[in-house]
Image (tube, rainbow over all chains, first blue to last red; front, top):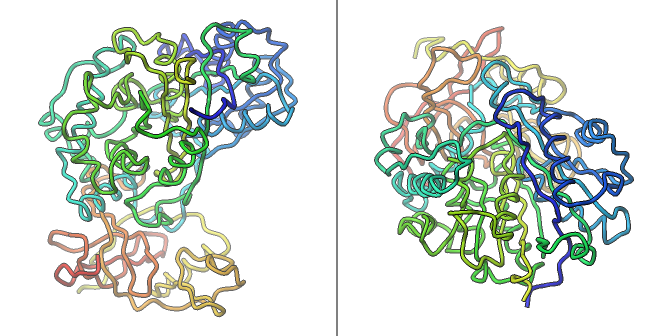
Length: 383
Length: 143
């Protein structure tokens, strides 16, 4: 039996205008927030906690509160990179358990695509000792992890490519995905090399987007919705801010947060029905399946090579098409939760995983130097 | 090797404190790392304290300049400020003293993990010279 839920997600939404280029990051964040509040069927006045992270705003919960006219008594802008929103789930659970809030709004907005090519509007500060060498971030950090993984374990470019091919196959089932035409392993290998060994099709998209979640105590959830999504456990960790500080280039902090989240949820990895793993680059998924314990360290390439992560395979993974083929608005942590919620609510359309009861969301941040993991369940998954 | 053979127009970072001190050593063609007087731990990047035992004021020591390629990537797209330079080889060099440092591998020839490297210097503009490495040996077992 899984652990008692620590949190319930009772509202979830993406910003309706995310592909129009018509809103600021705060505008997208607020649009998703308002939609999530309506989805939850709560009054705005019931929201007494705000959680956010951003590459655009120094104090994002202040932007969120001002934009939506919400004055919180709990505020959390924990920023550990793209996985921040996964970490926020556990933080929200703690705040609710401590009586510090009753109903929280976790929200994110980004115009990474709109602004990205024209100017880099980000607060991210590079490391002085790395700047003179011209690393292209974040890909150079992931490329060097991929290279080391290949060296130590014999991982191949074809095995990396399989991650992209599987993501694209899932995206073909998602009408909202940006890239839906099927690709082959050869297509990935034939795409231009960006930072060896990573080709263009090993890399995620750059999108505008965001999302929001309304969260509350599990005991309250059934009063609000017939289909609450529960958080059973979560965990987070980080190694370093910069790639220079990475301890071994083949293990992520997911080796800490993954097992700890599963332990907190009292769920065995073999019981998980659906996986949503942050995929900025194909190598990240190979690291994740190893660090989560789906296979031994070093065996992630062969493990995924048998196409088990493609639609119809034994390992439903990144069913929206992931950052590689659905969208990647700077930080993907919100989107991986939203897809898990869609699957557990049974709202995933032709990509729906049959009888999904338990979903694992696994986010990363920095240059895979931070991770946050959470186990989500619907009513079926609690049994 | 000709003086200046490995120079490239780079980006000189704004540096203060321990960063500025390290770049000052670079200008003097010294690759400096730190050693803790209390526990003997070597570290890079420089810190105000020992990352192992938190002893204050680690000593600056000059690295021998020898080591091997721990991992690398050939960048086919430049970073901003490095226009026209791609492809270039970025690497994490494992220094023989223990710490790892990001650098470039310069010179001709293929690069592989485990290759022995030797310290060279490259001017990146604004009177800043930075340590770069030349692949000098066969692939070693050091990894």
